[in-house]
Length: 398
Image (cartoon, rainbow, N blue to C red; front, side):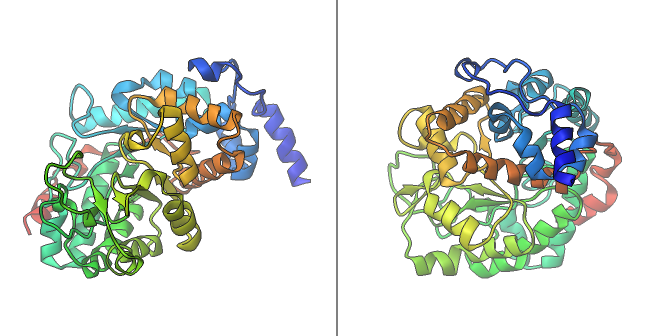
């Protein structure tokens, strides 16, 4: 009886629509496609019931993250985008906590007004909410690792999560679970240190501090980003490269931090720009789908790094297909977000991506949105007084 009522409800909400057809080729918005007419009713549906009522266009859009400078709030809701982010240095014109909160709520208000699935909004708050003028700046992870104090990590995580929450945002791309093996690596400062033991000490309290305060944490960059080889005159950026490792080295040095993060309940993991034994991680199905998801049992969102899939072979559609099939659920495509939506749709239409793979990605995204109360209460009421408080400044100086 419940399933029958749910089906009637879905139909009455207008969730079942024909495919978007040729609109996917041009990037235009599908006519009438995929509109949800009651967020309250969605909250009462299971994730499977929501998924069964979404068009392919809307599913594909859920799997894409755009940069705020490249997508307006109106575009975000028209396309039904799954997520928006602010990259390094990306802020509202008036870089104040109040302006950040207003910007976030402007996006979410559009989704509430049109009764669409609200967005996740991500940011790199890697040593404090460092994109926001007036936020408390804390030491980078390499300094915190030297302190060898898990309680301090927890306190800092709680402080930063409160400052992120004050601006409305709900997703932080941290902590880096990077076991740096060569100090010349370009992101040594984001690593807690050179041993797996340091990751065991710090990752869990960091993740719990953020997520218990309503901010999604992200373990990154999966896997062995800190284990890449140093190459003179390298054809890639200093923070990238190739990690040449045996299975034993991978499991003993670079894996423990991720196991700690998963055991702590981390809800997102970001894939590394780097390669593992010559294979780009963003196309590595054996490591992402078979190992991370199936063997380790990770149930959260797997997200790509900033345009990292562009380093895979082939044209853009080939790159998207390879990345999605490897097991990446959300594509961080700051500028080419429309093209990414189209590439997913075309991949399914051509039989290159299975609908089961798409549904798995959307299921993970919906699960996280539901857990963090984004589906039924996306409007934030942050308090700017939580930034740069006396207590946070004192904590940063410890």
